[in-house]
Length: 499
Image (tube, rainbow, N blue to C red):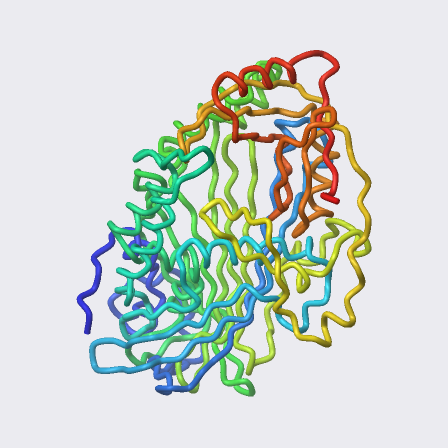
């Protein structure tokens, strides 16, 4: 087998329910239910060559209303709906080789509008950035990744993207985001797993390497830590064996994870200060109570795992992570289940939250993007949807042009290519209008104009909700001139669908 990559971050991410089940006598149990029914949890024994499909539903719910002082920002929801397939290729007494076939396509059962699944085109961009449609992993006996097969090809693909010249022949600086991404994968190829299929790690937490007997109601605590940026934050995970279903032959475990507040605050302090500086005037208007919230940070995780008592595999998981820092609250919920099992856990709480009317956008099947670079911009679109789905789809609806007022315009340096760009901050009212427009225009080509001059023709990949626009393609002199033009009291930008 390929030698495993030693990565402290991945080792810390494992909060060891397999060890808790298989080696429970070596852990300190807290409040164990000694009178509870004993259940034998088998070791994980997947069949070699059998393909399993997992349905994965994700939501992110963000709240930036403190910064924009508007209720509309209180519940911005994005969704993703995926079907990913996996099979064990080989297995010995030390580990396994597992293949994951990856897709950004919507499952056939997903019939809502494109904006309801904005994560799917984002995921397509990520697949294109790494140049893969499948990942082959070396794992331990629980399915936990220890090495990525074929990482050299991924690195070569990323390097070719970084080497591609940008607008005006500009090359990517060594300190750019793209270069840092490439270096991170060179340092640890398992970072690709973290981006493309983190569900592998979640599933492995419920899969034991040895058979064990555990009482229903037993509980235990695992101490560990997690990487946050360049810092290490201590974490405490409280596990519990919740129940067993003799009919479905499953066992359900729960975990609540908390993080050391002081260490977390120290780890994110630089980002908090950068956020405060970026909002300048708005930050100066915050009350003492609001600023205290900006400078405090919290993170928590709730995880439920349903494990098969037949082969020891995790057949369902519900994972919820909440982060509240720099005045922004983000909740990420992932629901995973094997599609040969009926799901029993609730769907993500924000799964049915309304974002935009289905009548105002075109179906995602008609606008599956094939990005050509790390930024994910492309003027081309093609359809991979089944013919019957396309036939049933309604034609794209018209979206009226909008006029946006500008709070601030200035020249800055593009972190990717190092060129001079014009950074624009919209007024709060225009930021909301622009957010609504981009939600409705996902997958469609648009134009940004000043007067009658078209400055940019981007394809909308995701909602733009922060009220910020970057315009590139100018030399330093022209960029400065445009910034001055947009700084006048009557300046405005028109945004419309491309003819």
